[in-house]
Length: 466
Image 1 (cartoon, rainbow, N blue to C red):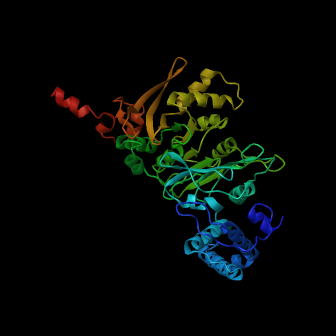
Image 2: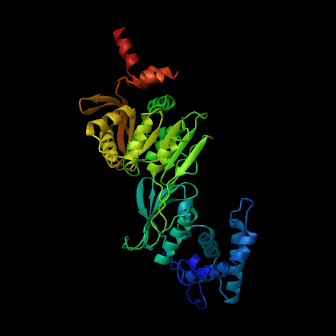
Image 3: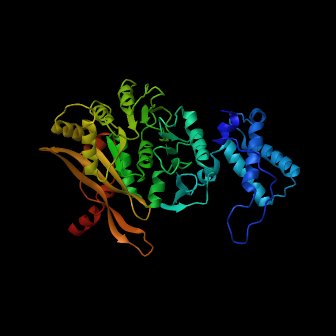
């Protein structure tokens, strides 16, 4: 396949005829006639001269300098417009240069969406329908690809640098952008509407606990309590549904790990953005073309135990690796963190039980539950509400076993009180006023929590008694 074919994501089309750019009718957002053929010609010329561009447009860091490539596109556009006697309005000229630049060194039509900080998720449902999530709500954009091959080209551009592949024999892939944004792609024959691409964007500046407080996702008392739990080396599981903010919470919790500890992170696609210096990041590897060489999260968890970790952070447990994670928590690796999909703290423990059984070990259910109760200290549960907001709805202590049942105790809860006129969820965060059994462990770590964090009404009670 030629270089041009690879960059275009499809076959080389014949050179279009003379181009005339006509103005749109007032109020109509349609593309001007001849714009796409001219853009294609400019892109093809840029591909032909790509060797020269690569050699002259590299920054000191080795990345292609967009300003130099843009200048090259301007020169090519001037030559083509002059040769074909085409006049291009200034707005169209700027847009054409940006589009060609996105094709050359970005991710094509979705590059402006990736650059838009107000967008949290991008969903490409085939070449003609691109949705985004903005403010927790889905909306259809006017962005479109040329055809299925164009979408496939962008997908390959994302996954190839990571050593991953997508083709008919391997039609699904998980990957990430350089900034850590999560990428999932599915292509035909599994996707019947054409290639499907989903990108969950990460903020350029990772969200902090203060951000979550200002968003109304958590209370200040809850944050102070969670910070104390992390510093006291409690084992914490963050649970919630898809898109509820589990990875964001894991990032925030990991920020409280002391800088002098050795941290090992294990993920399918590296997304965590830890700020400590002593961090080892490990990522799974899919099988090769022959179906061999796959490295799973379970393999990495077992190997991490030989790497002298102070903390093990697993991006998400989905299957048999839960057993290895629990064993690590029970054998001196306190302070471990992980996430999992569940609808409530109780459901999270039930899922852990199921995942341990998926490891293939013939263990009695009671033994599995005892392992979970001994390993996990705290479950932080998050939910995504209908108005698009995300909130920590439960901070729940795992107290131990009573008979065959794991005993849970809520420390903080979110109480919903309906919705307002605009559809926004109303409610409040509330401390239950119960003292966790692991408070002694927090105090032994030299951490003092003010009384009002766990017992907000204590001062009022004392005044009434007085």
